[in-house]
Amino acid sequence: MMNDFEMKFKLIYPKWAKLPGQTTFNLPPHGPVVFAATLPKEVQVSFTDENVEAIDFDEACDFVGISMMLSTQVKRGWAIADEFRKRGKKVIFGGISTMLHAEETMEHADSVFLGEAEGRSDEIMKDFKQGTLKKVYNFMGNHPPIELVGPARRDLYKRDLYNHKGVQMVDLFHASRGCRFSCYPCAVSYLGGRVFRPRPVDKVIEELATIDNNRLFIVDNSLAQNDEWEIELFKEMIPFKKKWISHTIEDDPKILDLAAQAGAWYVYQAVYDTSDYIKERVKRYHDYGIGVEGTILLGLDNQSEDDIKRLIDFLLEIDLDLAEFTVMTPFPHTKGYDDLLRENRIFDNDWNHYNAGQVVFHPKQMSADKLQELYNYAWDTFYADETQESKMFRLFCNVALREMNEGTYRPRDRRLANKSFGKEVVRNLQYES
Image (cartoon, rainbow, N blue to C red):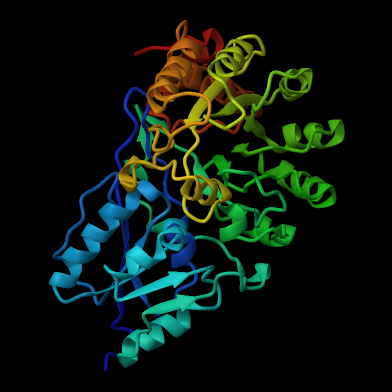
């Protein structure tokens, strides 16, 4: 039996095919380094994100972990596991898409972990060392105390691999788990529960203090779930002067003002109709200097072809900074999946195609081919006058200018490494190829 200091754990994040025609970049993945933070200190961890570097299947290790977030990763994850198991290595799976595809994943695994890992990894490592690894560690619905969530193991990232055309990518970070909403196509209520579980603000601030990157993506499902907590969070974030992206912020002037002071850069805001409320919602974000990326879901049963075209026209009227279009995708363990499966409307079961850009079901008010055509039309129409990459660079320039004015800009972005040149580019907001 190995002693405590001989355990070498190889953690892998499988690659997936990016959607054609869209700006592609790689963010440092969050799930694997959150899991790594739960491991006993004596476990030596090495990490490979296959989206930015190749896997060395001959690397010396005792135990292999595969962390999967997306359905489009699962087939690649299974193939990686099969290769390591051929070489005599034990493999455990975890992560969001492991929970969504657990039964299939078990066929390629020595063990699968379902649920949240805080306070539970010691058991897994002990079982592995003793040769008693369980086939399933199922903690679904049995959430650990949120106070146990500590800083992620960002030291495992190879930082130079996470930039896009010389621009440093954001770090991912989370301040809460769970979601009290239950949106139709979403699996969050299955994965994290319907109860909003905010991290204590002092724990959030403790982790923020460990993050060197000045730009963050707060990956919480929605920050707009508890006003009192949200206000306290933003007040405590202000001194850090970080710039961040998030999903929805509460539509309240006091909270929006605090969010702006705390460094809100831009938000993802669902645009689900052409109402004045949505138009005013976008305007209120802009009034506080917060950009908006609209998230638009196409192919719901209540949408006709004309509805979708009207929605796209509406997007061009409301001054969105960016728009991201997805097609309704029936991920397992969602009501959408259950409904479409019962109605025999799912015609494609290849998980590689479950990428939110490929139609895999029969829509109610149009053909699958027509919905695919409208998805492509939406991207082409919204970005006809200015490319997605150009609009993204414009948002980046805005935040870089704010950093320069505050004295927090760090020339880690090679395209703007010369400060005087950077200021000129930023102020003119000119995109250079």
